[in-house]
Length: 314
Image 1 (cartoon, rainbow, N blue to C red):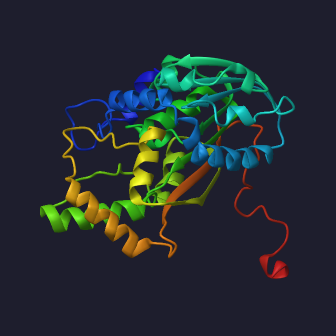
Image 2 (image 1 turned 30 degrees about the vertical axis):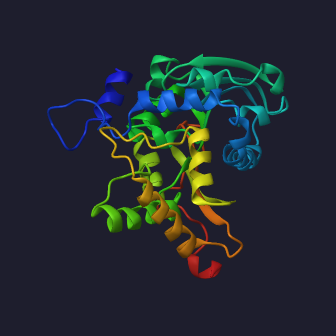
């Protein structure tokens, strides 16, 4: 019943004959990208964005005055968030990721809490855990690669116990806008048209609606930015590949010509250069907190139940 509910929520609006989410991303290609990235010697040197976002997520987690026995880290990668957990806050982390090499990249000795690792697809959470079993689910920079974000949020809510916590962070729509616009302008000029080379991402204004439709209560959504300076556009693109954050849009990909990339690099420096020869890259981060509804949660008062006239307050 629960799995059929998630599937029905994921029916593509573009076709009434095809069940399942519209396939934007090639999940198998993304898994291969992440596996290869985790095997690169430079894998740890490009953890800076994930580590920074995990640290900011942990600040939000520490503001929640509750202790947990077990936390499920969905799309954990190498465990950037789980490594920050302290025994005073949680006893165990269950890490789930579609990339086996990322999941097992770092030894258990780097974690303060007990760690269990499950190699599985983040889009199929209810095939990994039973409904109503999880105290808390966190996700650090993984959800921007799922094809069915509404359905995945429904599965997260179903997997939680009543009054269970979901805390997530994902890239927002303004991420890498400097790179995106530079590539588009260069491709239009040199090749007479454009193709997507930076993956589409969810707009900030949509997240609250998606969380509410998924059935979460007591929602908190806020936006932050991580800005990183790179020597050139080429260095940024190299680091994105080493992070496993390369383009994974479904379908054939038209490679950019070398002269187009050179033009994009010049446009990048001209439009966005910092004056010292370096160029910035903006990573927009959407943080979300939601709770599975429970009778014990604070409820709004009935309309007209107030005891103090609004005029007296003002």
